[in-house]
Length: 265
Image 1 (cartoon, helix red, strand yellow):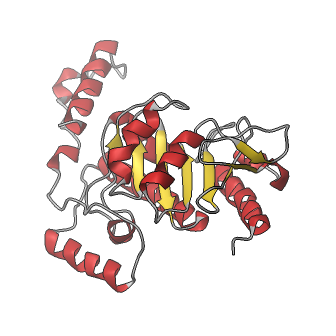
Image 2 (image 1 turned 120 degrees about the horizontal axis):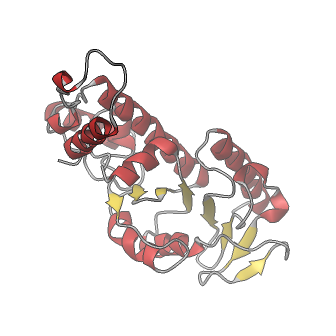
């Protein structure tokens, strides 16, 4: 039987972690837990996840209508997106939505985290796709994520953030951590000049571990094809004036366009 009091305390603990780890700013982000086929617990709107208290957690039905909770607080404005997840995925009981900086940077750049890079990420979250942009708090967002959540537990949201699903709230949160940790390392590897990708044979060996550990959920197998397009583009240093430490606006523009073009190939 679900212990709602313990779940509310976990909301508070994870809300603090999400805020302290810079996964959200101000009042961003939201979390929900499915209690049964009629009721969902959700974080309130307009409240920092780092400053929530148990009395702020609200119970809603599958239409987003408030069942119980402090009347001073309203449900998250993006609860529609969470409800759609529960309708599409009977195996999912918790959803965490946040804006972790590194992962969100990939979502803004339009670059999916779909390469086989870190062993843990290969077996835990697999290839992470990007759902097309949808206006937050409207039906557009559920419509955009629906094709992806059917086969992925973690999804990037174009120009928005990320979504992590799990059989319970702690697992959903851990998947968000794995996503941001992976995005951080991939971003730094790109800056260093090369993104090494695990070969197909190693990827397949890792996937046998996923079966061995009986990991729940759904993932799309990551891509083991070498991704030379992530290599740092070569800059023509002859363009720079050796007699001056200043770089013109035009040179900065050309370099920026070169980097963006390389990443998007």
